[in-house]
Length: 137
Ligand SMILES: [Zn+2]
Ligand SMILES: [Zn+2]
Ligand SMILES: [Zn+2]
Image (cartoon, rainbow, N blue to C red; front, top):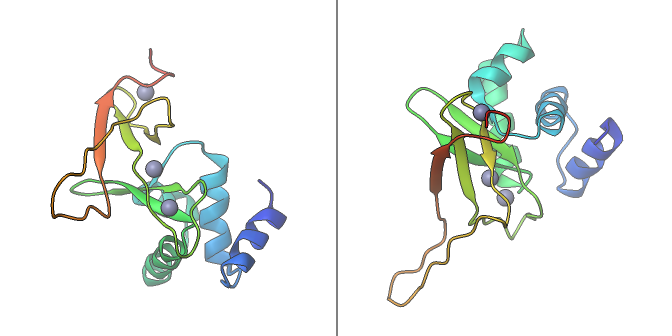
């Protein structure tokens, strides 16, 4: 994913290709895994916290990235595969490696079937799994 594609993605969601948005997306495209907020901050170097916060909110809202994992002191974000502005939902599993701490979105090779048979309407499902990732096996 190059710079042009990042700009195109932003353009499609009617978002301006601000330096911060491009920087955050570039990082996520480079990694195949989710990135923690603290890691993002580290590699951004000199930046404005509020701008970063707003940038992430706007990317999440437009279906470009999603929250992969929330921990006490850090939050991980990952790219969405085929979410759009109006259809932004996931039911994949988020996996954290006990060894290296990487967080990744597990693909359809790992799925959980939820039987919905009640009055509750599930909109968002957060499934967290942990174990050993492919790099650490
Ligand atoms: Zn999404
Ligand atoms: Zn690992
Ligand atoms: Zn995910």
